Length: 52
Image (cartoon, rainbow, N blue to C red; front, side, top):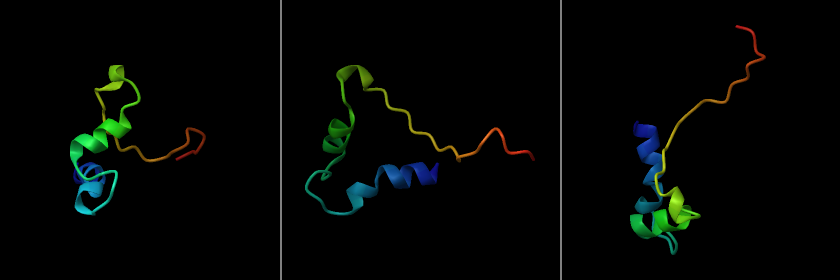
């Protein structure tokens, strides 16, 4: 959970033109109004072909 929160709020900790507040950051991420329920996830890249 801490990795997701750190990555999500990273732009708020550093000054910048585009990401100066959370509303502005979310507005630039949402391509259409129907996609307003964003789900963050953290999944390692693995291959099904690798034998364990």
